[in-house]
Every structure is written in structure tokens, then in C-alpha cells.
Length: 502
Image (tube, rainbow, N blue to C red; front, side, top):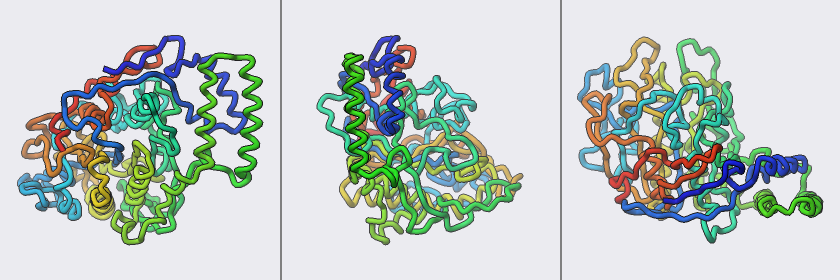
């Protein structure tokens, strides 16, 4: 078991709170990116568990459809159930004998021999809980969802991967962020504040995902979220033009007025300031801040990240294969980032302009949204990503996760226009591919109406533990929280050997 421990007086990187405040004063010199990239020093080791394929995955692409898809209309249809359970959609056969999925996923039906479906996901919190699904935290409550910096949060899986990679012996210099987030900071483009979950918590903001931003317009009005919605929203997740592009945010790019020459002159001035400062404080822990400055300048001056985000370099045919939607093009950008060396890339299908009932949270207008908007985009993006990775020889070493907060109710609510399915966490489905997972496999099962797990229950923490294992991180690793208590990175999750046999 790998232990990353520290004292109660200091932060996880060995810096005291006074040190951190002192260093924070450098923000006046334009080092917001440097501040966000401040990383930590410690020894690290990793002990593989007994399950197979430890470290098979060199990278992970995590796809998160916020709001949670219905298991019935994705990977666990119930064609023999009553109409109030089965609904308007049917099941189709796939290229895996005996495996059926929703009939509105025809392209996915042709690649199911490359993926694993887990139909027996279960946990006790039918809530919007990105943080519960993607961190080791043991319990959850709704109020945490809009408080991303609440001290009770645990670190995001991508942040843990970044943190541990940084502290391993012989870690190579980073010229592209290990932990990336697309298409923008979660919740940043809706009428609600940014949402909790994809943050480093007590590991420190240096290990938050490096968020990009997107510039572009939607091309079609998305189906309404509810009966009383009056605003028409051209949601880019429903379609966008080829001119749309991913850009570095304000804290991660040079302003038009700041040329490279001026940047290096500013760096020289700052170095002189540091030399004077070091005469006042010889603490070696503080002097390590120099390398974080260098990393920030390296990212600002380098073109590698910008080139990886430039999806216009791909052919029109390949872009169409992913789907000309924001989710599809984000998946394409994720593949490019992995090729460029990023270790963990997260793609959110996020809310846009209107939060209530957003994205996959189909409490109302369920069937129009699923048929016209959600499933077509997911079908293209998922199948496009899996095929593209496989054809490039990258699938076996890239773990792809399609996970969400929970599932949706077996019983259809016919009250709202377009019907609805509500939150349900007792049984739901996720999908995994590559990175040491089996191909053409179904794990677990549910009852006749898709409401209860029938066999082989799997928790979100088990998925985290398994992902860590496949990425070469011992899921029993402990890190210290802000009070100095050792916390397991995957909570009570265990590695599922049946998901590590690819």
C-alpha cells in the first residue's frame, strides 16, 4: 500500500499555510497559471494488486453525460417488459451474440465487440452527484453539488492520477497537462454556478483539471427541457459549425498584448525578485516553487497544447464520424490530447444556458430529447472514438469510461409532455473500453424491469479502484486530507478482476 503522508502543520506538499500565502503574493506578477500548476514533492511507489493488467492503460478518457442516461434507452433495454417500462424505444441486436442495446444506438451496435457493459451498477444516492461518482468520498448530500470547494470533498480521479504521476521517481518533464477537462469548466456555461466533482480537493488546486474553453455557436434549437420552458436554446451539444474551436482559457494563454519577448522579460524581472526573496527565506520547500514557474512559462510558450486542441487539423470525414456536435468534437480533441501525451482527459456532456432538467436529466420531454438530441450525438461520438482509437492502435492502451451519477426510473412518468424518467441509483449501466478491459463482455444483470440488480453488484467506487489499477496506480494508496488523516483514493472500492481481463 502506497502512503502519501504529511504533518498536520503543513499542506500536502510540505508547505505551511504561511508559506503558501507568501507564495500566493506572486500572483501580482501575472503568474495565475504558475499558481495553478504548483505541484508537490514526495516519494512514491506502487504495488499492483492480484488482478490482471495492472498499468495496461497509459491514459484514460472519461466521458460523463451529466444528468444521467436511462439504462433502458442505452445499454439495458427491456423489450419484453410492459409498455410503461419499455417505453417507445426498442432493442436491437449487436455484433456480440445475445447482447442487445437500444435501437437508437445503431453505430454502437457495430462496435460492442470492443467494449464492456456493466449493467449492475448500484449505490444509495439518486442525486446529481458528480463528486460521489468520480471520487472516493463515502457519502453525499445535494448541497455539495454547488459547492466545489467545500472542505468535505475528496479528490477527483484525474487529479489523483496527476498527483501520483508527478511524485513518482523519474517523472519526465510535463509539456502538456496530464489532467485535462473539456469542453469547459463543469457548469460554467449554464445559469447555475460551476458544479462540484472534478477538482483536486485537499490535494491542492494545482491538480485540478486544466480546463480549456470552447468558442463556437450551436446550429439547432435543442428540444425543451420542461413543459414551461419558453427560451429557445441553440445548444452546441446538438450541433455546431466546423469553425467551432477549443481555446486556452484566460489563465492559460498569452494576452494579445503580451508577446513572447515581453513574457521572457517579465520572467527575468520575476527571477530577480525571487533572488532577493530567497535571501530572506532559505526554506528549500519554498525554493521548489521555481520549477512550477518554469512549467507555467513552458506551457504558455509551447505550441504543443494548442496543436493538440486544434481539431481543424483533422479531415472533415473523421470529424463527421465523431459527429458535428460539441460532445463529438470534444471526444475527438480528447483523442488528440492523449496522443500528445496527456494522461487523463475528461469530457463532460454539460448543461448549456439552462440548468434545470439539463443535458441527460430527462424528467420531462424524455422521448423527444432522447430521440432527436441525446442518443444520436452519443451514438456518433462513442462509436467514433472507439473505432478511431482501435484503428490507430491506441485502444488497448487507452481506458475509455462512460459513467454517470446514476440511472433512471424503470416506471415511465407520463404526466409531463414527452414523458419522463426520474433519478434511480439502485440499478443502472455504464460502459468501458480499452486499457486492459475485456472486449464484447457484459457484467452483471438486472431484473425484468431494470430496477434492481440481479447479480454481481458493482459500486462507483469499484469502478474508480479498477480504473486506478488499470492506470498503474495502487487503489489502496493513501493521501492525507487537510486534517492529516490518511484517506484511500478509491474509498471503499475494490478492483473488479472481471473488468481487468482484456
